[in-house]
Every structure is written in C-alpha cells, then in structure tokens.
Length: 463
Image (cartoon, rainbow, N blue to C red):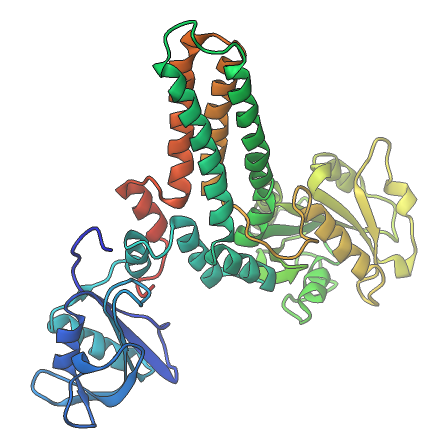
C-alpha cells in the first residue's frame, strides 16, 4: 500500500535513437485518464481505461485535435500488479527519437509530469515492492559489463543479498531486545551469566556480517571493473599487447619510437572481470613537449591503476632506466612482461636482487606466453575476491560502509558486555541501536530523502 499520493509521471523507457520499438511509460492514478485522451483503440466500443490487466490493444496515438502521432500498442498494468505497484500504462510506438518525444509531450500535456531519474524504481521501493538492495541490483543489471556481473545482479534483484542482510538485522534485533529487557530488572537481581549469554549471541552474528564484508572485493571488480595500464620504454611491444588482448588492431604498431603519444583506452572482459586497458606513451627522456605530456599521463595512469603491465625487451639486458622505474612500482599490482623472447632471452639479467615481481615471458608476435599472461593478470586482480565460485550477489561500496559502521558499533557493545557490569547496559544498548540503524539503511528499513536521492539519481529517467 502506498504511503503517499504521488503525481502521475511519464518518461521514455527505451534508449534514445532508432529502433524497432519505443516505449513511453506512464505511472500513477491519472494514468487511465491520460491514456483515454491520447490513445484510440482501432477496435471501437471501448477505451484504454476499460482494458484488463496484462492485455494489449492496438490503436493510434493522437494529438488533442485528433491528428495522428503514431500507431502502436497499449499495455495495461493494474495496481498493485505492476512494477511501481501503481496503475501503469505503456504505449509502444515505432522506435525513433522524434516519435517518442512527441508521444511523451502528448502525455505531459494530458496531465502527467516528467519523471525524475529512477523515479519508477523509487516508487516500487516506497510502495513495498522491492527494498533498496534489490533496487540497486536493477541498476547493476543495467550497467553489467560481463556475464558474471549480470548473474550476480540478477541474484541481488531476486532478494538473495537482501535475505542475508535481513537475517543479520533480525539477529542484532534479537540481541538488542534481550539486552534492553535487562533494564527492567532491579540492580543485583539479574543472573550473573546473563551478559555472558547475550555476548555469545552477539558473537554469533559477527561471523555472518564478516562473511558479507568479504564479498566486497568481488563486488568492486564486477561493478567498477579494473583499470589496467600498459607501461614500458618505446618499442617493447605495448601497443602490440593492447591489440593482442583486444583481438583486433586498435593501436598503431611501428618500429619508430614515440609513435604512441597519448593514452588509448579500450574495454575488455577477462574471466568475468570488466577491464579498462590503457596503452601509454613509451617512457623515456625526451625534449618533445607533446611526447613529454604523453609520458606524464602514462606515469599518472600507472599510479592510479589496479594493475600495471610493465613491458621490457627480453632480448636485451635490462636498461638502467627500466631498472629505476621498476624499482618504484608496487610489486603487489605489477606484472613484468619480458617480451620478444623469440629474439633471445636475457630474463635473468633483470631478476635483480630482492625482486618479487611476477614475471611472464612472452613473444606477442607468435603468441608465446600470452595465455600465461592472462592467467597472471586474472590471479592478481582476483586477490581478495573469489571469482572461481558460481556467480552470487555481492555487496557494494555503500553496503560495505554501512556494514563497517554497524560492525564497529556492535563491537563497542560487545566490549561493554564483557565487563559484566549492569551500569554498562544502557550504553551497550545505545550502540546496538546505532548498529541497527546502519543495517536498516542497507535495505531501506530506515531511510531518509538524502539516501534515496543518492541511490535513485544514478538511474536513467525511464527506469
């Protein structure tokens, strides 16, 4: 049941541009009145407002003066059996920006207002159809860049992640209720082991909470992807590596040093992880201002990347400049690619003292070592994430922040209970209430307008 009486909203629900079908979605109490004004069924004797739930009718969309805008279908969805739990009308016309804008403009003239970003999904939440975690799963599915990310988002939409959050919330609520019950007792009347028992129950909830926190690394990779930068001196095969990874010639490959002067970025999916591969200018001393700017950008990308692939020419002894640059790289997120081993292999010459870099020997021209390189990339990116298990719903950065804060509050409550003093009960109860507040914000058991605006403003207008 709706907690408010909203306006009737309308928006184009399909992507802009040409297409076979375009959809204008209308949701709210005035939806049928608007439909009767703008849609005329070709089968005479009834109006759109008389159609049954889940049925289509064919007709024409018309202006106020009766002139035709388009022909198409009208889909009827009656409350509460719709996405928003309100009366929803979808008008399906021929795809195309102009036609869709004309239909939308007509719906607005007939009494609707323009929907805000994510407002249809926001109404689904406010009307109790979904919770906030499921709403975010919808956005994750729309933005998914790999099959694994899409499968994880679908599980989140179906409530798998919400169920885990709700279980933790209910467990904390049970502990808080038991603790607050002790406040009704007169001092010294409580059994000596009561706080020990409550503390043990609280400990049992920590493991479930920590297990959820452990899924954050995987969630970060699936939602945000990883930035992988290719570094190295000129003519070591950086652009060739980009082309081999992508499977087509994206970057110009030339023996002329300094061919690549600016960064080149392309998307790539590796073992279900969406990547942004960045080819960069060759690192060297130069007096050319344009090339120098390209090198500066390359170094900046290297500092901010999730993974750096530093290429060297394995057929030559390690250059001093390479040695200096490699020494400044993070070993935990860098793979040294010893390329051109088909011309000779002096890899041992740059396995310098104290180095723990992962080194992969390749010949990108004939494909030697390429599969090993992809495996090394996946292994380094998957550190802290379990991407070998079947796809499953995983937490987002918003969830993680709230879980961390809830965990901290619960830990403070636990520390007070360990002291076994009745005077700590009130303070411990306050910490548990704060923990419940943070947990409630995850699924929307408790929320404020700023929270909703932050979440739904990331949606497109038609969703």
